[in-house]
Each structure stands twice: as C-alpha cells, then as structure tokens.
Image 1 (cartoon, rainbow over the protein chains, first blue to last red):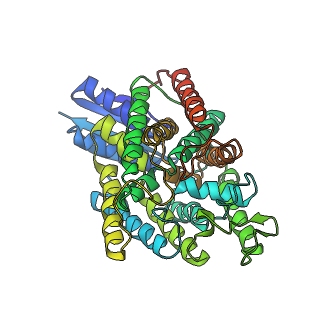
Image 2: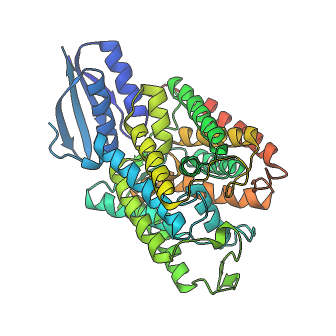
Image 3: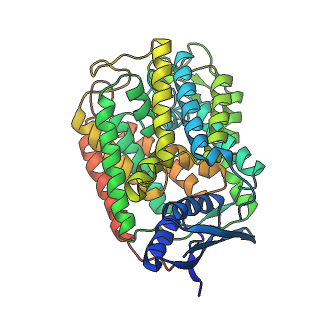
Length: 72
Length: 365
C-alpha cells in the first residue's frame, strides 16, 4: 500500500521534514508526496535520493506534483 | 520521471550562482557601493525606507535599484519557467513582525546574512561574531521546526494578486526615474537622497539595476538562500545551499584581493562596529526571524517576485522595521550600537520566540 504525505501549501523546510519523517518511519515501501511548487519538488527529490529512496515517478496534475518514492 | 532539468538548481549550478553573486557584489563596491556592502538586502531596504522618508537618517537614504532588480529579475525568471504561482494566506501578520524583527536585529549588526559574508570576504573580523549569531539563530529556528513549528499552509491566489508585488516594485522604480538624484540636493521631488554616508555611495543606477536583475533571475532559478544554507546543513546535513553560500564567500574574497579591497582587521572596518556581543545577538535575532519565516531577506524578495504574497509581507515588515530602527535609535552606527539597541534586540527576540512557541503544531501529513 502506498503511504501519502500532503505537503501542499507548505514552505521550506516543512515538505522535506514531513517526507523525511515518513521515510524514516516506513524504512521501505512506496511513498507518495504531494507538493505544489517546483522548489519543494526539487528539495523532496534531493532529500529522498540522499536517504536512499528512488524517485520512481513524477506526475504533474493541476499545478501539483505527485512524487512517487520507492525503497525496497 | 523528471522531464526537465533545472541546471541552476544542480550542485554545480548553485556553486556557480553563489560565485557569480560574490564577484558581482565585490565589483559593485568598486563601482560605487559602500565598503563590504556590494549587496546587503537589509541595508538596501533600509536605504529605500529612508529615500521614501519613512525615516530621516540622512546618511542612509537612497532608492537602491538592486532591490527592485532582485524582485523583477525573479519575476521574469518565474514567468519564463512557469513558476509564477500567486499564493498567500500563511500568517501574514506574524511574517510582518518577523520581518520587522529581522531588520531590527540586522541593523544592530549592520548587515544581513549577505553582507555578513561580504564583510568577512573584505577582511572584517567582526563579521565572524555576526555569522556565529546567524548560525545560532538559525539553529534555534531548526529546533522549532523539529518541534512542529509551522505558520500554516498558503492558498492559491489569482494572478492579479500575484502581480501586486512586481507592480509595486516597478512603481517604485518609476518613481526613482521621475525624481532622479540631483547633485548636492538632499531631495528630489518626494524622494530623499543622502549627500554623505553609505546612502551617498552607490554604483550607477543602470549598473545596479542590471546586476540586480541578473542576481534576481539566477537566484530564483537556483533557490539561493543564505539562511536556507545554514538551516539545511543543521537540520538535514544537506550541503547543497551551503555550497552556494561558501562559493559567494570565496568568490567575493578572491575578487576583493584582486581589486585591493581586502583589509583584514577588526577596527575601522567600513560601516561596522566592534561590539562583538551585540554583533552576535543582533544576527541571532535576525537568523531566528529568517528561519521562522522560511527564507533570508534575499530569498524573501525572490519569492515575492514569484507571486508569494507572504514573502512580500515579510519584505514590507523589514522596510517598516528599518524605519522604526532609525526613528527610535535602535540601529547601530560605526560608533557602536544605538541608544536603544539592547532593548530592541531583547524585544525582537521575545517577539520571535513568541511567534515560534505559539505556532508549534502538528501539520497533518
């Protein structure tokens, strides 16, 4: 099951904090992070990569980004 | 998968942007800006406040074109890359007060984080105390973030609202063109112009404006942020923004060396005082305020150009804070801290801590 983090409307560093906290809780699995700006997309992607999570998919929908992160 | 790559936001990109800003800042000093003040967002906003007559400190009154360039350059970049996203509604009054507090702290030190780095790059050892205070303030801010601090979510706004800040800034620029500086005159129309002191020292208008636009464009694309550099390092051990911060320092230092602008020491540094404790605490307050508001003063300008109304509110908080700082004797001068500088630091710190503690909550994930 894909876990979700909704970081829309939040500014730095909160999207990264929320995503990292969830990644560390989950350890492995699939996580979808929802953000609404390019900066948060970049920051969450960079943080995920440093944590060893793969950015499996980026879906842009109505000016929002759905980042699908995966770690096995 | 990612379909487009923002080269400015890569590791190399952020270092290049920091280095270019460092070189341009040192050059601005050579071309007329005050010593170790090629770019100082706090000082320049203070000068803008003075030019508009919000305070009457006659040594710091000039409508600094760099500030307008920062916002408009970021606006152009955001429009060009579909990143102009009008938004606001995240605790505007708290952000205004954080802006005021940040400015009051910065004017006790005599500079924002950008100038703290430039002062060090020019050999001003007093900047070390300011940078230590900045790091401490940002560090306290990260404790709040770890504890669940949040000013809440923004909401999307219409394009008309997003355009307000770029329009206001363009209006101020036009005002400066309508009432240009008249040699040896302290006033031109409604605008005040310093005849002595830092406000009288400036690069030619067009040079300042073009460099401001270039910096605004590059910083918007790269997300350059001096506070974020320290925050991400402390909070996440992420070196990305910090590498840009360090590139600025090294590039400005090397350019200063090449231009004969590097003068190491503590005494008699340009627009600086040697009261180390207050250099530290002034920047501690500023660092905490920037951290709680989510960006250094430059980043707040760039975000306001992207349509972030809350960042614009922070900017106006800084401008009003500058007016208070000079009207109430809170700001320092090369002679030392102002008569009410200590009280100002205490009150601004209490204001920041109040905003910090009163906004600790758990944001729904």
